[in-house]
Image (cartoon, rainbow, N blue to C red; front, side, top):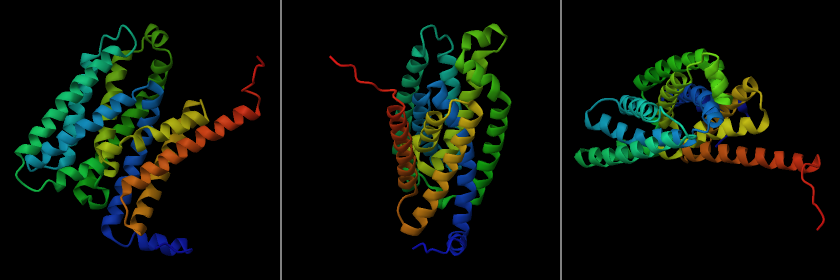
Length: 290
């Protein structure tokens, strides 16, 4: 159980190698998920993030079946799905309907593949099931290295395309008129999102992916409309949820994903409640007599 001595608690928390790996990988994942999640909410692509998370399950199952790292399988399948969305939904003449149709089709096919790989696998299913809810406390040194490489490349790419991506998201017609390749930017972001999903699955699993890819960004956009501040706040919230979730899981022996999702949801509800209360106090809501 934790004590009132914060320094002693931190020392206790980090005395084991598996917790050190968990915090290093968790920090990398939170940085990428918080940054990518801001754009997910801004662009209205929560359904796409959900689909990519579900593709992670057959990807992990394929990795286990082929006796390679499940994280590698996650990355390959998520990248393939992201490119599929970008290609199938490239001609979006009426909102995001074409992209949504591509997402639904790929999701159905990937779930069928996941069932096939699961039936073909003759060993224990624990390694596959663990990716449904996260395996951060059992992450290996090799997985940490892979997470570091993926996070570094993805964050670097996001820095490069960040400003034009905001422009293309807020006003795609004007951006395209000024020479911005909106479709290519969309493909690039989907690839970054796929990589973010692939490594975030290690913490919260495919079923709880929204905790880090949607909730921090959604809370941040409720608090500020300025892109720089919202992006920084989304990353800060993602880090806070991850660190607190890992610490609470260590001291209580309850699932990490439960704490991260609960913290993310509670924060979002609190932010919405405070914003609604502020609107009422400022006279934003008035009752018109009949």
